Length: 173
Image (cartoon, rainbow, N blue to C red; front, side):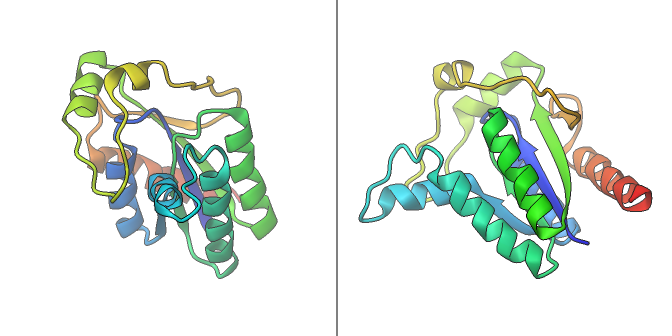
């Protein structure tokens, strides 16, 4: 049974860095909503902001890969109950096991430094500035998820923790 690992968290907390390492180690397909939303913006339709279009497109791509038995790492902010429900439905409809992982950076100074020093690697993506990150809508989780603090864990430690959680899920059915 394939895994769908849904990474969540505000911009700049380290999701993409962790996602890249994790997808190589599992192995898994890495799906980044930023890449989809930037493509929608560059398209002839010039969809910006993408609203739910990026998430819906990403979930469809994830479902296709999960149905083929491939693991998927979804790298998204995943800020509200509706987006989190989308990943639950995607996992359920494909028979995949869902692991929700919230990445936080509890050190505000470090988080700000990361946001302000990032450079985009996706054509057409405009990275949010610190005031935008601070005011970004982000609802607290109301269901269980694995929470990792990137200010105290290295990327390797975070990936190790996620892979151990996946092993426990596999063993516990």
